Length: 490
Image (spheres, helix red, strand yellow):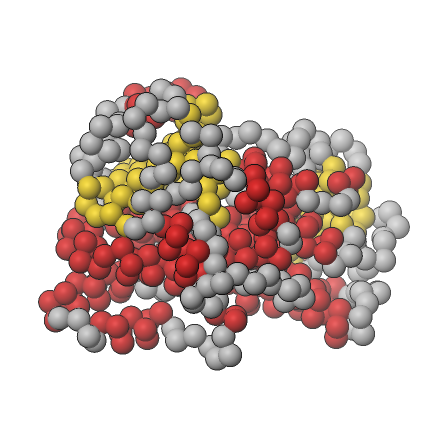
């Protein structure tokens, strides 16, 4: 192996997780190298990103929230959210979601191009020379004192450990599992990746200057085995997601990949699908500037690390994007990883000299123990929201969407969504800028917050019996039951 530095982290993948982690490491004067397989850190894949208060709080600690706010200054913020029936008619309307978020949680809900967030994250780095492109990882060698990462072009990079932040189809995860099979059989469930499920496919993209689009609005459209999320963006853009239930659940290597021909057929099939009373899916697609059709993986793997390798973000857990929390919990994971490293450094007297594999494994286990329950909660909540909106169980969807949802009103519905944010993590070794908010995050409270299930029971006690039974059905259906990649979701 090449000579191992005293302490250096090799990050694979310059996405949201990888670049966020690099920013946090710089704040702690920790050395790293970030390897990206594409020719540019900022790749235009037609994707958008939704940032909620729990993700923005971490970015605020890094000075990035102000940069995002400056970038979006003067743009129309997301105001009204409409939940619509399949014919485009209004089922219920939520209040001004941006004002609600700021008042309750100190930060807004932001939706913009993913590549713009990547630019902001990258531009915030002091050591941009540590980000290297055109580096497709091909192998990882483990040793007692460090790692060596090989790339397809023949280059090699030495470090103390590897962080796989390279997404759903993680190369690092595949190499890690292969090493574990040889060196420590049974560390990973051999069937786990093959059992990871795909229930939906999704057309997503960015349109611009859509005639008649209600600026500032967000549309959530229910349907039969399908649903839509269509959001206003900056520069008169519209971000769309059209989710369609697969006829049969697909798993592992059986999960399909889609071509441009498949996408064209999808557009033709759903062209007349209503979004509002006046705008159809076809109206939006006709003004697209980028798009893709993709299968939606849903999983939380049981173990995320092996010896000197750890995975974070979509490499370890992947929710359906309907609730927009995937990128936010990836940001949280970066915070928790560095929190564990800082605790380890403190225990070692303030240094990482001669860091042993066993010490790292304990730190990685701590990260997983901290994150696993939350990842399962977020992935489960997204799956259940999608199931309700796509009428997978028509009677359940009718009770929730038609009977309970309008009765609850916007404040209660937004409060339920807010409960998912309050469990977010932050960087414990950096100050949290003061932002006035009515409701503190869970880790800001002197005592542990009452669980969602307990607060639900207390709240339901004061409702009329008939309505309470409906809402109890809602909350039971969307409870925080845990699952992993091998458990059936439906």
